[in-house]
Image (cartoon, rainbow, N blue to C red):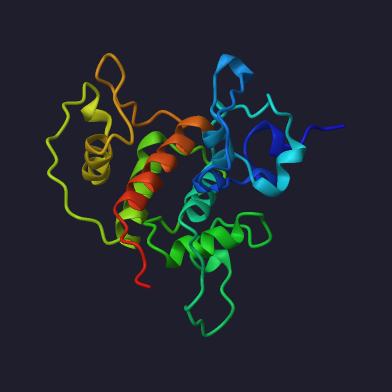
Length: 222
């Protein structure tokens, strides 16, 4: 029987969840597939809570890389983005916004939400292309900043050994992510902007972003 992509690389039935933010609900647990220790908080971001029974406890493949569609779904889920309050003249479909999208694919609704909720994505986006680190960080920062009233921060640019490889339009967002401690350079000072981003790294970035937003959100008035 062919093994489903839901187990191999974060796809249709393994879309990410943000259950880790439920205080006190998670104990520290380690998962060691591919010789990588993954804490319970990170695992909860990587696996849809409704489908955890489909994955063995030690088989989360944290080093598997993610596609563009999977990365978009992750950010949509993490920030609880939806289409509530938006009125459409006709029922939207993903291909209205992205010409290469399959309107019957598992990711279709996430693409529609992304197009209307703060993402900056090209019309010729390929949902199945593997997402790079710089693409993920840029979209994460853009959505986080556009959807939350956050204070400006003073950024002292980090000198990157591979700065010439950065997409110019992404530089500001990447420097802010570095300044906030969401991500970091390696021991040689490289950011690796064109490298594919792993499930574990994307989940950790999301976790830090949500913690940052939560710490700066005022409690609702009673």
